[in-house]
Image (cartoon, rainbow, N blue to C red; front, side):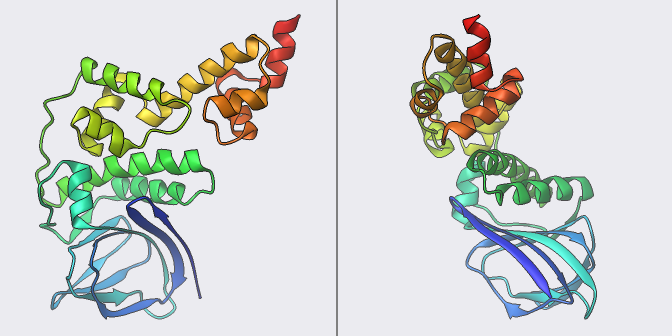
Length: 263
């Protein structure tokens, strides 16, 4: 018996699986495969060698590597998996080429954080998905570095770059500016953009754009604009998204806020 959640996130394919005694025949993938084992012992067969991956293990497979294995019959097993082409992952991390040097990293805390991001990326809410995808890219940089791949430094970091990123986000506030486009404008990989922006502001670019959206919504509502019009003009998915983010930021719904400022 097994249950699986599965989704595409732009260039990433992710899944979360809960099962007992699941095994995989020997096979290969065109993409890089990153697995995180949460519960249970996985017996892995990889390129004519075998090893065990227990809870807290992160397994890394290069494209074309022959792999197989799984959990013992009747044994509980819970894991998440992530699939991405080597070229895409390299581009997102600012690398010219990517090949994992290690197949197994035992890093329980990073494994839990990465698994939580993958599960969050399977959420039905588009903003929650986007925020977890951002977190996932940053953690993949950590995973790849632990696998023995040296990540390049970035020269275009600091306040000037972040200010330019904020200008671009503000200009495109009525719709979500994809990280790929933002990174291209600034000459940064997704990984370095996220790291630099987070270091300078404490927020991801998407989080920063959402707080600006919510702040501008407050001004429009104060001036009597209808909440439905505000949601549409500022790029919220719908009025319920405006309500949720406004309440999270200011402790009240847009309707209650408008009632309060009319007094």
